[in-house]
Image 1 (cartoon, rainbow over the protein chains, first blue to last red):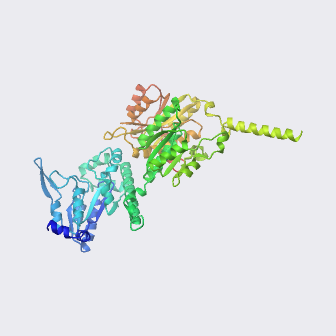
Image 2: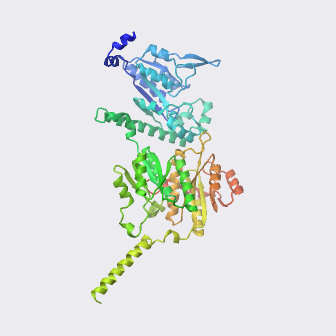
Image 3: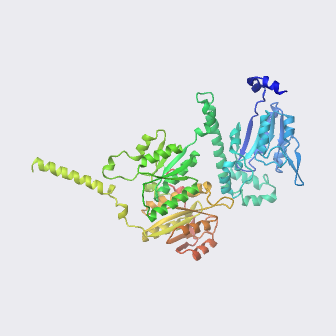
Length: 390
Length: 189
């Protein structure tokens, strides 16, 4: 087709003739061995039985018999050989998939890094090309491969995963299905030799595959899927409405930002801890704000408390902001607006004396001046009589 | 007594009330500056999701006797593959509820409490950094046969040798099964 002919096609017609983008479904798991590939293959069979043209573009059985058995009956495209530094490596054959052009292609291990010399550095880029050709894709991913969770998982397991994918790739998936098993069930599978060969089982049990690791990873995976579901629900609700233009920002629309008011005082740590827990539950960012009076001198105790607060903020991943102002409420309002705060947490306001008792208390002033922002006063539970019972 | 005297007396009483309201701290409590000042600081470090109740009770007894502040400290360990300043949300999810539980229990007994978080490549490194930053008069630790639960014997030896504070090490005992865990947090955390 010539350039002249291209120009003669109206844009609407060009859009109609362009292949539709394929549908991407990702099977997400907390760790190796939960059954992501297995369930991907089962779904491939179901689609094949429904009359669709299904092929396996790439399969990693890791020597697992169960997985190899369930792959039987699905056409498997052979891998191609790529030479790199005198070594022959096997990689997915992207050109062969595009030539074969099935309706549905199963491509295992979305986060894989390709050998040099192939079309793309990363497998998810191959998948993007397959989707762009109008081919539906089923793929698999472990939660630790998500870029934003990489540090968190490294902290948890002590192992840094090198093969990561941008979170946006998962965000663009049309469906994400969590393959969930309990940590104990996964450990049973591991001990039975269904995940790794027998010689690797002991090492795995002593390192990565510990109940506490797996429980935390499971929590991360569940949170991740909940976030994806929430973001997609918002997008779906907005499309077609007057707020259609906001659809692209829908994931941000559900996000919260917390602001905890602190002072260099031992009690501030309690407020910060509670605020952090709330932020964790909401999947929100946390800021801490200390409004310092101009010229305020800090005692040695205050300085120690401030240092402790700084360390706590750092270890929790919160941002500590210090503002100098005579107008406490004004400074809080200004920071809350600047940071897009949706939630303010504070300790019990200090008891006031004399004529100051006639003033509107700080929480009410904040509620008046920050409509739409929740204000929460964190209780000191040590004052409750039952606090000593457990 | 005529009406004028009564009015004057009432006005004087009202003025006195306002003055008292201004100068006296509310609820009849002592002003912070008038409270007896704790003079000693007792560090109660922990690494896991629970601490020995004996260690906790020892800290409370000593704090009461010495008018001291208890400083529970969560020691977070940063893997070598992360920068030392990294946020540690996974460990904090375990440590913070326990810190909260200890703080609640200590302050409900009227003992001043100041929490701390130490961060290092190991529990010992985190403790060393904390001790380098602040002075503590006494450190209370319980020797645990399972080094994953707390400080190892090596760590305790290091503590005795290197740290310029009184060290109270509680030997393992059958009643060590009594522990304070994050589950002791009062209310929603």
